[in-house]
Length: 277
Image (tube, rainbow, N blue to C red; front, side, top):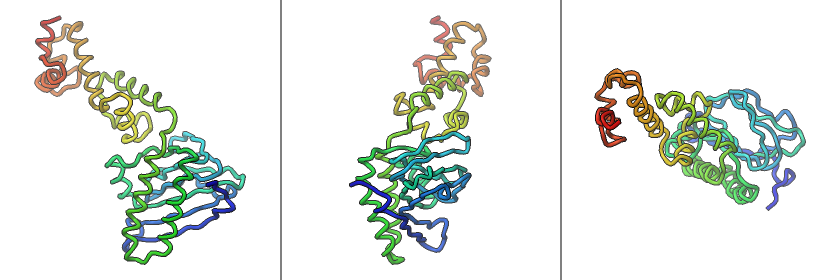
């Protein structure tokens, strides 16, 4: 199936599940943006919006002024509360399908690992064409649905968002992302949390957590502990500091906590390790 702007013009529906328009936000549809007027600059959504670019090109800019080129197959997430821009290339081709749900629903799906907090991911043209019937079906059902049918369609919208996410590949640069995260952890000798690493890298923690585990094989928190213990081993062998003072230098609240974690990861106490070297 070939998607064309002629075949799919702007066709949208805005509904509300319940009485709260923000918490019950449910909307979707095709939007054709032929020119620059379709761009959104420095916009902030209270709710969640995901748009799949069916045709055309453009650019996404996040709150840190980083740019990502958009083309057919880009899935752009308008993450709740985060300023961003989507710039339309004014060549008459831009066609998107969007789905909006509440911020709370999105965060629940994110916590369950069913969605990502990466603002832009990509899928193939073949995948776009596979998804198109599901998009059209959701729009048609929402247009005809009575109020009592909306809760079921709300769940269908969430399922479709999860399906799109599962079929998308990550943005390029995962390898560089993991390498940078490892260097940060090593720079701090393991005394840094995954949340702090993500903050310094200006990326979402859930994105980093999942990608790190997939690439390295262990959670980012475990990797940080491993780095910290290896730092401790090195200091024990060459510093000559009493172990209680060394524990403080490594950032532990007391020697007991240091000893407990060291033994959990090495099988012996710091004192035993010192005697062996």
